[in-house]
Length: 222
Image 1 (cartoon, rainbow, N blue to C red):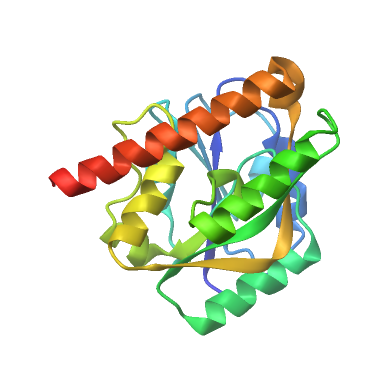
Image 2: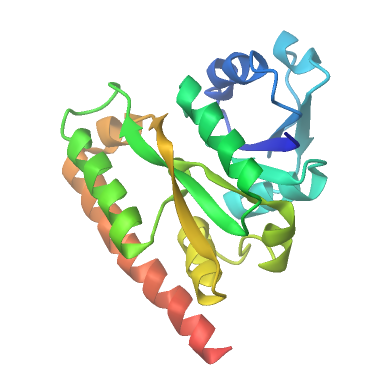
């Protein structure tokens, strides 16, 4: 499997140091690109030949695009640094790769136990939103061919937030399919713990509605 994993690394973000060993333990990984906005740190994990550290412009869309441009694999997996994996994730990616579909694949979302227990509800609602409204978020781990990513011109670097939703809306507008993979991807709930469950939940709902409306409006005007 010709897989490139792209992980955006924010300022002072060390979550990748927990994720990286789990990725390197899997033989199917061709390369891992840590796309950051700071210089490469001294870390023994970065000495693996499969790992590449990119330093560039800050901003998730900029960092994701830079990682995709540098990727040598024909299959891209955009993965958040605070994600946690199961073996079922790898099997799902292999099956998706074998189908050779021009589609965007994503995983079922579960939050880890580092936040309020109500985040279980957030995860369930996120999975329902993805399944019935066709709006998965980036923390559900987008997987797609590099050729499809290029055809959609990557993520919109003009957006400060919501580049994942914008990408999904454009993909659907162009007639490409979404595909839910039969595996769970865990994501950290620390933002809910830090900012408060209600405030964070309401903020996500508002941004989802706003970014989706803005993306569809831009498409109609183009």
